[in-house]
Length: 132
Image (cartoon, one colour):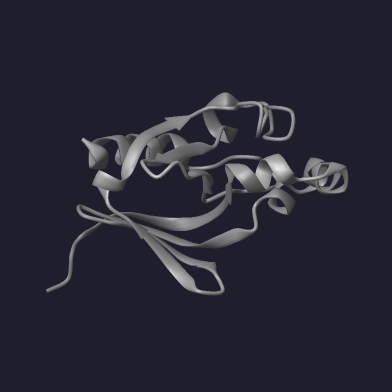
Protein backbone atom coordinates (compact mmCIF):
# COMPACT_ATOMS: atom_id res chain seq x y z
CA UNK A 1 0.00 0.00 0.00
CA UNK A 2 1.29 3.47 -0.87
CA UNK A 3 1.54 6.09 1.84
CA UNK A 4 -0.11 9.39 0.84
CA UNK A 5 2.32 12.23 0.17
CA UNK A 6 1.66 15.39 2.19
CA UNK A 7 4.20 17.58 0.37
CA UNK A 8 6.86 17.05 -2.26
CA UNK A 9 9.36 19.38 -3.93
CA UNK A 10 12.98 19.82 -4.88
CA UNK A 11 15.37 20.82 -2.09
CA UNK A 12 18.89 22.05 -1.52
CA UNK A 13 20.42 21.62 1.93
CA UNK A 14 23.52 21.92 4.09
CA UNK A 15 24.48 20.80 7.54
CA UNK A 16 25.31 23.50 10.09
CA UNK A 17 28.88 22.16 10.16
CA UNK A 18 29.15 22.59 6.38
CA UNK A 19 27.93 26.19 6.59
CA UNK A 20 30.32 26.93 9.48
CA UNK A 21 33.25 25.44 7.57
CA UNK A 22 32.53 27.36 4.34
CA UNK A 23 35.53 29.52 3.57
CA UNK A 24 35.66 33.01 2.09
CA UNK A 25 35.73 31.77 -1.51
CA UNK A 26 32.59 29.67 -1.06
CA UNK A 27 30.81 32.51 0.77
CA UNK A 28 31.75 34.93 -2.02
CA UNK A 29 30.40 32.50 -4.62
CA UNK A 30 27.17 32.26 -2.60
CA UNK A 31 26.58 35.99 -3.10
CA UNK A 32 26.08 35.17 -6.78
CA UNK A 33 24.54 31.72 -6.34
CA UNK A 34 23.43 30.46 -2.92
CA UNK A 35 23.62 26.89 -4.14
CA UNK A 36 27.39 27.09 -3.59
CA UNK A 37 26.71 26.69 0.14
CA UNK A 38 24.26 23.81 -0.22
CA UNK A 39 25.97 20.58 -1.32
CA UNK A 40 22.92 18.34 -0.83
CA UNK A 41 20.10 18.38 -3.36
CA UNK A 42 17.31 16.17 -4.51
CA UNK A 43 13.61 15.69 -3.89
CA UNK A 44 11.95 16.08 -0.49
CA UNK A 45 8.98 13.81 0.15
CA UNK A 46 6.87 14.22 3.29
CA UNK A 47 4.41 11.54 4.39
CA UNK A 48 2.63 11.11 7.72
CA UNK A 49 5.49 8.97 9.05
CA UNK A 50 8.64 10.08 7.18
CA UNK A 51 10.54 12.94 5.60
CA UNK A 52 12.74 11.56 2.83
CA UNK A 53 15.49 13.67 1.28
CA UNK A 54 16.53 11.82 -1.85
CA UNK A 55 20.07 11.91 -3.24
CA UNK A 56 21.46 13.39 0.00
CA UNK A 57 24.96 12.12 -0.72
CA UNK A 58 26.78 9.29 -2.47
CA UNK A 59 25.16 6.82 -0.05
CA UNK A 60 21.70 7.86 -1.22
CA UNK A 61 18.66 9.24 0.55
CA UNK A 62 18.16 10.03 4.20
CA UNK A 63 14.91 9.43 6.00
CA UNK A 64 13.73 11.20 9.13
CA UNK A 65 10.85 10.31 11.42
CA UNK A 66 8.96 12.87 13.50
CA UNK A 67 10.43 11.32 16.67
CA UNK A 68 14.00 11.99 15.45
CA UNK A 69 13.37 15.75 15.18
CA UNK A 70 13.89 18.04 18.17
CA UNK A 71 12.80 21.30 16.56
CA UNK A 72 11.81 22.89 13.25
CA UNK A 73 12.25 26.65 12.71
CA UNK A 74 12.51 29.03 9.77
CA UNK A 75 14.95 31.87 10.31
CA UNK A 76 18.23 33.46 9.37
CA UNK A 77 21.06 33.03 11.84
CA UNK A 78 24.82 33.49 12.07
CA UNK A 79 25.45 30.41 9.91
CA UNK A 80 23.15 31.51 7.08
CA UNK A 81 22.26 35.18 7.14
CA UNK A 82 19.81 37.43 5.34
CA UNK A 83 22.53 39.06 3.23
CA UNK A 84 23.27 35.77 1.47
CA UNK A 85 19.70 34.50 1.73
CA UNK A 86 18.09 37.29 -0.25
CA UNK A 87 17.03 39.44 2.73
CA UNK A 88 13.41 38.25 2.73
CA UNK A 89 12.73 36.45 5.99
CA UNK A 90 9.37 35.32 4.62
CA UNK A 91 10.65 33.71 1.42
CA UNK A 92 14.40 33.27 1.84
CA UNK A 93 14.92 32.11 5.42
CA UNK A 94 15.93 28.46 5.59
CA UNK A 95 13.94 25.77 7.32
CA UNK A 96 16.24 24.59 10.10
CA UNK A 97 15.68 21.02 11.20
CA UNK A 98 17.40 20.16 14.47
CA UNK A 99 17.65 16.45 15.13
CA UNK A 100 17.79 14.85 18.55
CA UNK A 101 21.28 13.49 17.79
CA UNK A 102 22.59 17.09 17.49
CA UNK A 103 22.65 17.26 13.68
CA UNK A 104 21.30 20.55 12.30
CA UNK A 105 20.14 20.82 8.68
CA UNK A 106 19.40 23.99 6.71
CA UNK A 107 16.97 23.35 3.88
CA UNK A 108 15.62 25.47 1.03
CA UNK A 109 12.55 23.87 -0.53
CA UNK A 110 11.85 24.66 -4.18
CA UNK A 111 14.51 27.38 -4.24
CA UNK A 112 14.16 29.79 -7.15
CA UNK A 113 17.56 31.43 -7.49
CA UNK A 114 16.65 34.41 -9.64
CA UNK A 115 13.85 35.53 -7.31
CA UNK A 116 15.54 34.21 -4.14
CA UNK A 117 12.21 32.66 -3.19
CA UNK A 118 11.41 29.31 -1.64
CA UNK A 119 8.38 27.33 -0.53
CA UNK A 120 9.79 27.33 3.01
CA UNK A 121 6.79 28.99 4.73
CA UNK A 122 4.51 26.15 3.55
CA UNK A 123 7.10 23.49 4.35
CA UNK A 124 7.66 24.87 7.83
CA UNK A 125 3.92 24.68 8.53
CA UNK A 126 3.72 21.13 7.17
CA UNK A 127 6.77 19.98 9.16
CA UNK A 128 5.49 21.52 12.40
CA UNK A 129 2.17 19.74 11.96
CA UNK A 130 3.98 16.49 11.01
CA UNK A 131 6.16 16.75 14.09
CA UNK A 132 3.28 17.27 16.56
